[in-house]
Length: 326
Image 1 (cartoon, rainbow, N blue to C red):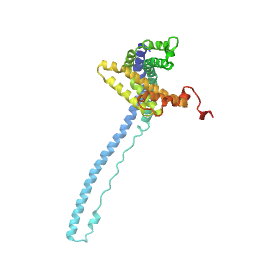
Image 2 (tube, rainbow, N blue to C red):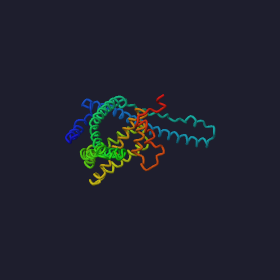
Image 3 (cartoon, one colour):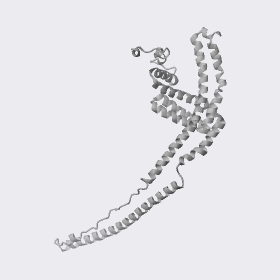
Image 4 (cartoon, rainbow, N blue to C red):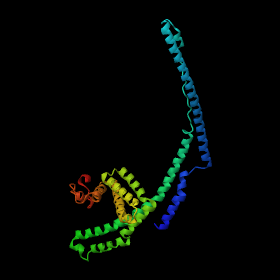
């Protein structure tokens, strides 16, 4: 994707797509919200008046209770002096009842505003769809640069492995493997040197924040696939590296680490792709297990399961296991 195409995408995001978040909002829409809020606040004002009235009643009520209790206290004192036969006390014990404070409910925020909220939710969904449509090419461009770097290095490695597997025959010029190794060397130049590809990934990170989108996409896929601790730890490492790179003030620090970011992205995406492919069948599952161990396991650690050769016949030779052939 050319710089001009990236520029066009950026302009579209800025000027064409962001207004979609307010889709359906016109003068009538805003007037409706204003009217509903006015009606809502009329109810609030009425409730305030009721509260003020009831508070005033409460003060009056309190004064009446105070006066009544003082009168009762006086009469009790007089009764104690004149004798227990005085019956006026029972007749004067009368406390006026309190009124319950009633506040009206506002239906506007429950019904009218709910409709507006649904309209805004639809607007956000449309905006999210458009935003995803424009971000997918950016993610593809980022992975394209990362995979150029990754596959060029892998081609050299596998061509070398092919020569080693064939021994002396693989080394002689009459055999095909020396030519494969020689041709593979040009990929790191023809497809772009690792430095150039890493700088392109860094440019996309600076300009479009593609690392945040990529990490979010991979985290969602990893959670869906229940990938386990290896990929989760790898994603956290990538997130930490990206945060360090983007917060670095010196450009030399960013350019020094950009190749590492690209390789981490490629490694995580390869792992997720392998897990998705593993859903197709048992053979793909064995391949995914072997790849994940190769990508994330310490190569110097003991492998009691011998994952790389455990299912060699079924994976490489594509032989059907005995229990499946019956």
